[in-house]
Image 1 (cartoon, rainbow, N blue to C red):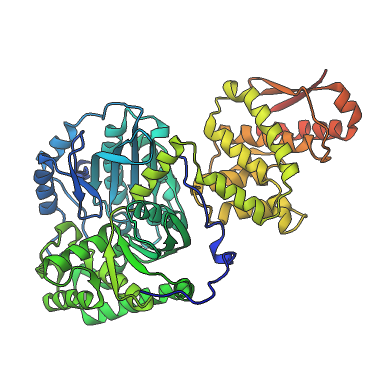
Image 2 (cartoon, one colour; image 1 turned 60 degrees about the vertical axis):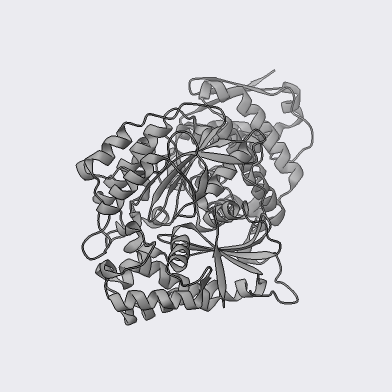
Length: 595
């Protein structure tokens, strides 16, 4: 237990931008298919080894045994994973889950394992029951070459897994599925081309989320099933990063993500599964150095309960209990586990009850990170909890069904933080969305595009807070690089591109540079709509523009505007003429019809 100081730090701490938010609404032949963990119908559930709800279905035991027999090399080191033919056949025989409006699915592309969970939402949309679950130890974080790129071998393992996930999800629509990618794909130099292939393999979009967004989702998944009063610290040790969150009830207070995980630390400090005292000391010291940047802040906030989530911590908790080393995770228990590992000298020789073969190779790295967290944050005891990232994603999806979207809260908080002039932003947003409705069908735009345009219009002047000169550039930087709860990196890049390209030269090359890749045509359309809306309201006049309409014929855009308004606002006529000169750079022609 760590008590907070008498006067807690200010919630406006610049390291905690936009923390308070409401729930969000939305080798080929040897490549490994994932391990099946449940059948199509939910059976009674219990806490599984990964801190998950695991269905008790007869097929599971057989598949798990095959999985564990194939995972590790002779030394307990991290190696590519093979699969038995019976396992491949068993998975191939499972058809796509039948479509149903109350089904939702979460896919987690972690640095250690890929997970897919399909659940059935309750009638009130507040809870869910798991009906199917797949998992594969892809070890994406172990497949990074010296140049920071995903190797071809790990890409093939990952794509094979996603194809099987996609087969199971084939009948679910896009609003029923959310897939998120974490630390390894945040860091990999070739993440974007891989992500394009991965999206095709899965059949659904994949969002790369920031470390703090990952932390937010983890806290949501954990806190859903925790009911004790008081402030809590939640720690989640993943394959490539560790998330630390302080919160109370369902609300996170502080979110932190550090670059250390069970896969990366095992590769770095325990190569080939060799366990040495020097390796332990170096691993713990390096982890404590990673924690230096956030230690003082977390200790200052304080907490009453320490909780661990996800695979590493839940596996350690089960090993401690099964080997008579305590009902809770403690410093003494961690030291006892180290004694067993050091006496064995190699991970393949370690004998511990409840040590899964698939976790053997990454246990020392995860244990070192956990020891460092205990030491740096002065933790005496920690409990393992149900829920993790996947459950948080699932709860966000359920929130979307109830028209709750954490992104709306994030945008509102940003507008307040950066002093956005609400009257002007609302005028621009209303006009942009009115034009959107007129062209959405011919341009093939949907609700997600509408939301993106509305958010960009609401924050199009956020950069004025920094400097009016070049405010669109300042605003774009904020939106692209800030930690925005609920937003994926792709969404933030699109928002940044919209705000950047609202002014200045309108060229596809500029949009491409803003997006770090080829922009989708839909984004170019949205940029055109925002540019026209900002031109119409450049004078900041409160006079309504009505009626206002727009038609499109292929790439010819006709803006229909009252002649009386244009006569009363000659500068608006000049603004629109200037925009007509710019839009050909985006492949569009603007005509203005005054009626």
